[in-house]
Length: 79
Image (cartoon, rainbow, N blue to C red; front, side, top):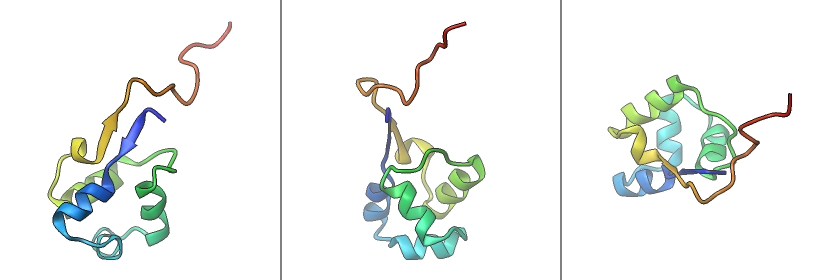
């Protein structure tokens, strides 16, 4: 995946556990764990906003784009 999730780094810098973030944001620990490990296929803007509010951070602290990694699917499809 070309997007790298940096949630673990943001949590460590703020000394906040995933459990505490789960409580603050109102998202299940399981769903946050999927996001943290980079296994999530999508994230809602409302979820991203809630995480940013709880961690007092910008989305760019949580997400990084790696252009060297191939995309999940082709950008174009045969007509």
